[in-house]
Structure formats: C-alpha cells, structure tokens
Image (cartoon, rainbow, N blue to C red; front, side, top):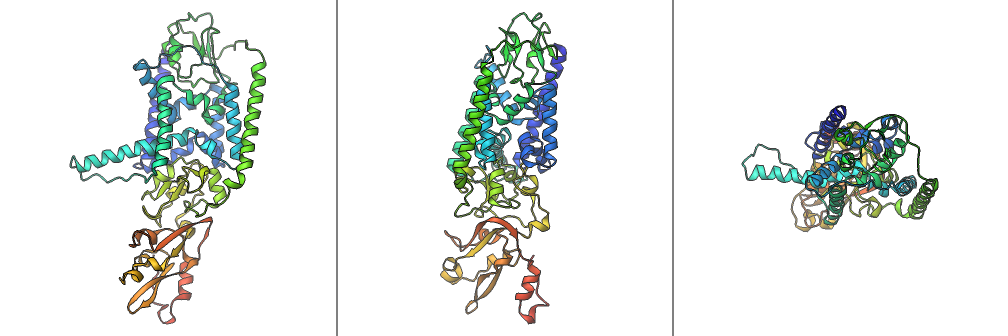
Length: 502
C-alpha cells in the first residue's frame, strides 16, 4: 500500500505540473514553454522526423508498463481527473461495477479516424484528439478568464502596471459549439470519470491497444483480494472487475489510486496473467468492427475528397509556413497553440472560412491586426507539422496572400483626403504612391513584392469597407527581392538615394 501511495503522489505532482505548463503555454504569457506541445503523441506522429522518435518512446514505455502517458503527460486527462475528484467529493460519482470493454466500438472508431485522415479528412481525428481538445479549453475557457481577470485588476483594482491582454476574436457559433463540447466532457468526467479517454479519444485507443500486451501490467491477486470494493470505487476507468478479480489493463490509465487504497496489498505489477474466460466471439466482433470503421472512414474520405481538398473561394490567408492548402488542411488539428503564440492575436480559429472540414483551423484576420514582419512564432511552434518552420529571412519573403486595391473605396478618391498610410506601413515596398489629382496620390501595387502580411489592410482608415484587401493564396511561394525590384522601378535620378522601406 505505501509504495503505491508514493507512486500516486508522484504521479499527481507530475500531472499537475504538466497541466500548469500547458495552461501557461495556451495563455500566451510564457512563450518559452510553448514547445511542450511537441511532446504529445498525436502531434509527434503527424510531424514526422524526430517527432517519430518521441512517439516511439511513448509507445515503447506503454508496451512495458501501460498507459502512464494518459495519467501523467496528458493535460486533458488531468483536467478530467480533477472533475472526477470533484464528482466523488460531491457524491455524484460513487464508483461501482466495471464497465464493458467495448473494444469493437473503440477500434472501429480508430479505424474511422485514421482512414479518414489518410484520405485527407482530418476533422474526425482533430475533434476528439486530446491535445487539440485541451487547446480549445485553453483558448476558449482559460485565456478569456485570464483576460477578464487582467482587465478587472487593471481597471477596478488600479493595477495599471499590468500588461494588457487580448483574447481571440471568435465567432459566436464556433465559440458556442466548442463550449458545448467542453461542457459535455467536464460533466461526463464529473459523473462517470474517464469515459472520453476509453471510448472516444484516438490517443487513448492507440495506447490501449499497446497496453493490452504490456509486459509489466497491474495485476489483482485473487488469493489476497477480499472483495472490499475500495479499489473499484476509486477507479477512474471502471476497469476493475471484482467478480472475475481482474484488471482490464487495456483501459487502465496507471493512476495508482487502486493500489493506494488497497489494505491487503492485492494489487501489484507483473505476475502471471489470468487465463481469459471470454469466448472467442468478441474477438471476431472486434475484427469486424475495426474493419467496418476502416471501410467507413475510407469511404467517407473518398466520397468527400473532392469537396474537402477544393480550394475555398474566397481563400483565407493561411499562417506562414503552411505551404499548400492541401498540406495545411490535412495536417492541422486546430489545437490553437499557434494562435496562443501570435503576438497580435491576428491568427483566429476558422468557422466556415476553409469549409466545414476546416473548422477550428487558424487563419489570419487583418481586421484584428497584421502579421508581424519579424515574427516566426507560429511556424516554429506548430507541433503537428502543418506549418514548416521558417527563419526570419525566409518569413520576410514568404507570400501568404496578395493585396487588392479598391480605388472606389479609398478616402483619397471618395473624400479628397490626403492619405498613403498603406504604402507607409508596407514593409516590402509593394505599395507605391503615384500621382492622382493635383497634390493627391493613391497607391499602386507591385504584385511581385507583396507577401500578404496585411499591414496595409489593418491600417487602412476607410470604413466600413477597407480600400485595401489581402486575399489568401492556395500555395505559398517566395516573393521577389525588394531591393532588386525597387532599384529597377525607381527613377534613374533617384536610384542611388532611394531608401529601402524596411
């Protein structure tokens, strides 16, 4: 009993530290910890490269000792444990008999998730992914709460030295839908524990499949067990069957709660596995359910492939490093880590801008801000490989969009006011002021220099409709060298004295 108490205490400390680190990452306050997103299982698998090494280490240790990842490194799991603990304290969740394994359901869903992803449809996998789900909690619950607290302390308590915080500009429908999913998760955990982890979560399904063959699993000693039910009452996963006196290690998240409350030391690691008492029929059902899930996922992806991979019209402005729309759309799970890292909160989650299959994926909204010229945080922080890491020099030449000047909306034309804010704030010189009427000038676009950073659209004073708009491009390419282009287009008499607009 005592070793398990120490084991449980250590696990709780680790899980709370991990939860705090991830909340800090999604708050945007501590950018130094945002790399932790790359330690999660599904992002590591999607990212490839050395990410596969992290995923292999997680899977190998799971094969040895079971699903330690779910109880220690998954922030969403810790959040559910906190809700479950509150449910037990309020006597809303009193434990009870073991639940059926439902392997067929779980493996069928896994087949559906991954076959749809291979077919180019990532939304079925992105919605229940534990890390992306926690990202929505961070962006929709924790970040707004932190912004509200910050505003209260600055305005009501006189703490004016605090740095003002900004929240994301979320559509009402998207925020309401995500809020309902989060509320459903927390209420379920409050009343029934880790239902999500063992029935819907793709990471839980993969790790459960590996833990099914674990070399050193938890065992329930039939001779020592007195059937007091203390272990079953605290089990988060409802995986302890006291009638058969076995622990379903496929669903066990290795929290240590059962061993910590057992007074007769009937629970321990390793030992001889009990002989299975179930007939082979469920195995056939598992095979059929998994096959049905694979077939359904593949059929869904194939039937929707043309619609899913079709470039949206109008095209939203993808984050720098997205490459092509097909690559970005098939990799991004909408975890929101790039949005949390964006200094101006210009990255915002999409509603239907990418189509229904891209809900939650980030795009640049230049009504909120601009894409900072020297910033590469989003591309370097992406844990899924949806964004390719960029250097500052590469970012400054990466075309994410193309500017469009609408002359009939420009205040120079409509009101006769002198302006030029768009050209003044363009970092590449893609907008040059040319003569219009008398001393008035209007912008002229040099398309090969435009990188679509949105500085012009953001600063444009024309209202309610901007005179400068930036449209996304389906494939991000390299813009021309401003020094070379502007040298050619500058008047001969002023070429030597021309000041580069950076």
